[in-house]
Image 1 (cartoon, rainbow, N blue to C red):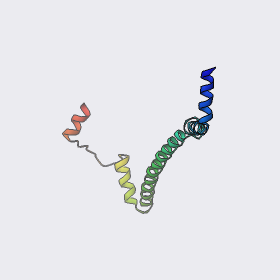
Image 2: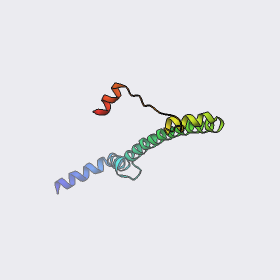
Image 3: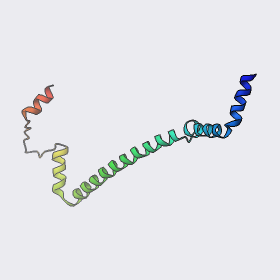
Image 4: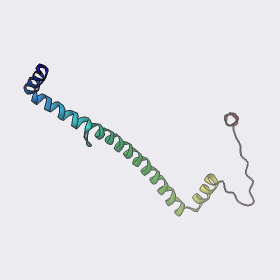
Amino acid sequence: MIKLLTIWNFIRRHKYGITVFVFVIIIGFLDENSMVHRISNIRRINKLHESIREYQSEYDKSTALLNELTINPRAMEKVAREKYLMKKPDEDIYVIQDESTEKDSEK
């Protein structure tokens, strides 16, 4: 009974401090909108903004290439040769590799 009375007196004396402490624990860690969740959401948003910037730069490059392909027919030939390894019917293609490239591919 004495322990219970001692605990009750401690709670009565420090009720505002205990209330603030419980509030901080609930808001900081237990709530659905806690600070831990907010920080993780901010990190996720920053990663998404980074990927948006990457996709935007890739989109700009692709748009510039598309504009070049529609204007210049030689650009279409260049892309077909370099990217898709196409050739004219009367051409022979020789692939030349460096020795360092061959050694890397053997490993």
